[in-house]
Image (tube, rainbow, N blue to C red):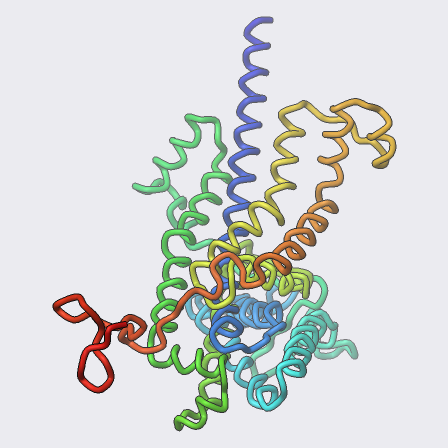
Length: 421
């Protein structure tokens, strides 16, 4: 009896630890994904001033193009082209960039407000098109009237419609756990020693891969781009496009190039985040994602790559997913909290357990209140965000400080003498 009780206790502790690690994995994955998207948006809005509200659309283009290229011919629920996964991922990025260029060509001739309307409209057109049965490819018999497989130069494919599309795409780190490998097996053994299951270990390994390789690569590219002559032109366009044009810069071409680059980065983020499970559907790319990415960038500060990453981590960890995951861990640790039907029942009970139960059960709705409060506070107290509006050097040499003379008694005057200022 004592042994049975000990086994039950250890099992409960193992389940709790698995839940905690899995919650941490989910929060970190979402934070990294939003950091990737926020860095891409910072190229558009923070550097160039392009108010792009079509983030979810470019994610969908990249992810769906990758899945269509990688899905096996004749696959279910929709066929694909059966290309290798690395080629498919590259094709998804190229597709997102090309679509970004197509959208930018006419849209960039519009004012900022109308440009935003065009991008959000594009995002919804993409989502509703891949959801529509016309291109779903779910009926693959040409003899039927409802035949809806897309035939392009003899290659047949479909989007899967509302059912989504499957492809043999998984986290690249899964290769470490195929059989007994020098890296994967020790990680599995280490997790097992603490009672952590293999699915949690493999999922956390993918998060580490994104955190130490992909996210730093995004950051370095964005940082070097921002400090390059190309990036300085983008910032000049943001501040005053007429002045940039007067200096002989073809601002329209610069905006098209940065829009295509940002769209490709958004497409890759969609592939790595939404496409990691081997299955995607249109609901994975709702416009709400765009709102969340903008919120993260507002919190961190537009124009700052560091602020973009910090804002994404703060938003997802403290506002978006953190409260819900923490509530789940609390509920598991407490052995199940009471669930009052409404706020008044919890308040009138004068029972702390009822208060906690209400917060845990309604945390998904309450998080939107938290997000609203944070946005209102930022708009009133720090509209530039945590790291926004930092002092930036417009040239390759910092000319903001005037050198002192050797005697230290003044600064060099414009006529070659010394000023007493």
